[in-house]
Length: 427
Image (cartoon, rainbow, N blue to C red; front, side, top):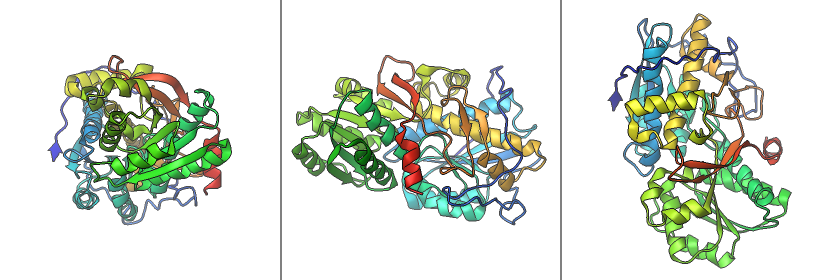
């Protein structure tokens, strides 16, 4: 699927947004400080780059089980580059064209779609979906393909993969610490419902770490496969454990399926969700009011209710281009990935060389103001423990149909003191 870039008509600039180092290293999950060889055959490629155009790729789910997130993600990317072309002159006069590929949340289809993009594009400003990003992660290193993923587990970190926000481990640590400290729940009985892949494994690892540090007990751990449609077995296991709170490391389909079954069965526990557990589609479901009242989420993406220059700009652009996506939070995350990638391309171009390797190196040392898309700055550091993560903070939110952007702020950007300790202990 290909979507051509269309002009936007907004007179807002990104002045002062680009404060990047000219070159840098791409670190492999903090275990080394390897520098990309920009003169290598793969990294010196200028595929997708001409004097007049830069072609970029998007890998997303437009037709599968998480299309409720995948569609607005890709619309957010497109909206940003529409704006960049019409108001910022593209990249030094080069217009940006976006080629969107639908993988349907199928890792094999994602690999095939990536192979097609590899011969066409200079980089990928959005790869959506944990299993699909993992499926292409090994190959992008060989191809020196710079890539921004919506988010993921630290287990997913590979050379050249950069997240647009906090990890699933961060979500878990920030959520449970908020519940204990701010929610005043001492020594809660905690159950975990998790997807059986790196999304769930990252959450499980972080929750087990937090239980040792905070002294609470994990009374049930129930996994599910991404293809599961019924969760009666998992529900029975969790119900029998008599939890105070259930942590949901799940995508929206499983979240809504399990939550619906649990509420129908009379579940009375509290609910904590990770970022992928929410989509505005919940507002049209029978249990919408209960979900809005009882379900709290640790969210590492932009929250429209917090405002900011980039959020305001994104919403104005989306209203013109994709009005149905304005209050769908993933659209702002797509905008975030595109903003990061554009900033790296500008830095590479200003350094005098626009190739896959130079874009990747600029991305690896990105340091730009978030404009409200995050807490303060998006910063990647190849020497850090988590070089592909721009920040470990989350906003604690609840779903709210009446709030601009569909998310109501309970607590603004913050990170638990467990986060740094967790990553130090796992390296």
